[in-house]
Structure formats: structure tokens, C-alpha cells
Image 1 (cartoon, rainbow, N blue to C red):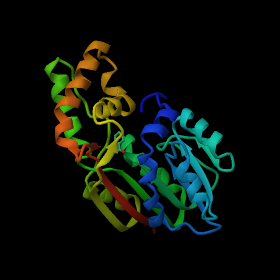
Image 2 (cartoon, protein in one colour; image 1 turned 90 degrees about the vertical axis):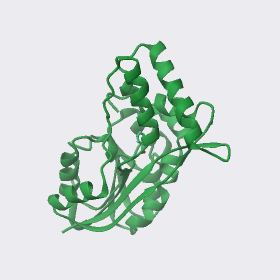
Image 3 (tube, rainbow, N blue to C red; image 1 turned 120 degrees about the horizontal axis):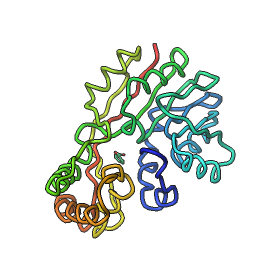
Image 4 (cartoon, helix red, strand yellow; image 1 turned 135 degrees about the vertical axis):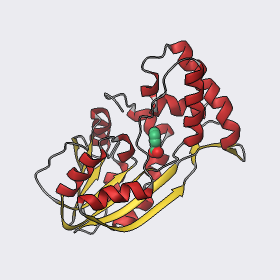
Length: 251
Ligand code: BEZ
């Protein structure tokens, strides 16, 4: 997100699925007691704290000072630091780097991969999950149409790579790929009537930087109306998330 526009309380209240789904990613890393682990893009710190419960020594970093303040308040026993994925420089190397739902925010992906590589010891493991190619495609297709109908330019902000694309970047940086999973993971939004509008408000304010409030509201409502029928199942509304999971080793 540009600047620090995160609302940590709202994020935890309505979008807890972001870190709840991340639980199973911890199984991919298999942290062991005594290992040193970095959580890259730790947000409000729930998964960082869970990683720490394995007996590993964990550091969480996030570009958002708001998120880090919330993480420190709720998990005072864990080390947290404000740091950017493309530029972080920490005094040690790690046995493992874990990253959930962060790397699609990082458009300078080669820089983030270079930083992760530099911060792993030889043999260290990288486990990541991010939005993959086609992520939230129904929402974005409708948003593009609604913006262009009103004369606004739609520019995709996030980076949602295909497995082949991201694996190629990791291999180029020197990683060995151990495991890949590319899958649909519909994610339940709290209120079927306003779920898409709320999701856009929370995660996509950058699309509306130059859009007056009246048009912004009209665009978001149009997207809600258009997309909800495609994404409702048994009365519940799901954002059409597509996940890319990768486990890799520094060789
Ligand atoms: C995601 O986790 O896929 C995601 C979340 C917010 C905005 C875009 C993508």
C-alpha cells in the first residue's frame, strides 16, 4: 500500500482470514526450536507469534508502522521492526524466511528476492504465499470496466505472477525450488451486501487516488452489484483469491 494507510483494527476484525489461512503455511516451513526465522510482511503479527510458539526465535518485519505498532502491542514478547521488503538489512542471516500475503504488494520483486536470498544462510528455507496469476480477477475486471466507463485510467497495482514466472525469478537468484502449489482459495467476506465495497475500501484505495468521492462510491457499488452474483455461494460472498505457494532452499 502506498504510504501507510492501513487500519490495523479493521484488518484484524474483518480480514482475519489473511492470517488464519496462513496457519497451514507454517507447516510448509516446519520451524524447529532454536532456529532463527524471519517473518517478512508480518502485518499485525499473529503468524509471527505462532512461529515463535515452535521455540524458534522470530523477527517480524513490515513496511507499515501502523501494523508494527499493533503487532508490538499484542505480542510484546516478539521482535518486530518496520522495514521494507525491497531494502531491509538485518544484522543476521536466518534459518528460514516466511512470508504470507505480502509479496504481491512488492512490485520491485527482484529486489525483494535478492534481499531474502541475502538474509538466508546456505541451506536456509524460504516459504512464501502470495496472490497468484488471476487473483481477484472477477473484482478487477469489473473495476477496470467501471473506472473506464467514467473516464478514469485503471492501472493494476499488485503483482500476481504465474508459478512459472515467480519460480524463474527465484531460480535466477540462486534458489532451488522444493514445492509449488497454485490454487483457488475463495475467501469469505463478512457481509454479502457490502463485502466487495468494503474489500475495495480496505485493500484498494490506491485505485481511487484521483477519483472524487462521488464517483468512487458509484464505481465501488457498480462492482459490488456486478460481481456479487458471480461470487455468492449458499448465501455467502467470497473474494476470488488465487494463491501461489512456494517452498525453496538457498543453495
Ligand atoms: C491477496 O491476499 O491476495 C490480496 C489482498 C489484498 C489485495 C490484493 C490481494
